[in-house]
Length: 77
Image (spheres, helix red, strand yellow):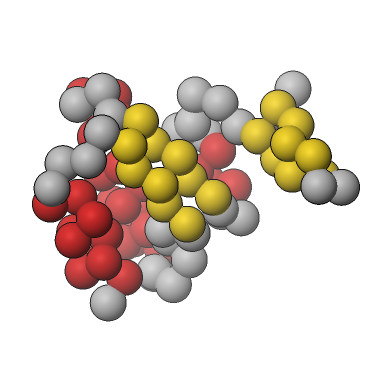
């Protein structure tokens, strides 16, 4: 179901993609494929990608990482 939801979200080629836990319920192989897909769309098609996640594997592919601590948005060092 999650893969179908991601496909539906991308079909209209939005300029900005907001993904809330896109790998949350996926097995590790599929999660890696989704991370690669979203990263490719971001870089090759120049679309903005905002991801809210607890999956630290996504952090390695991000240009910017922010955390929320005590209700405040903080950039990672």
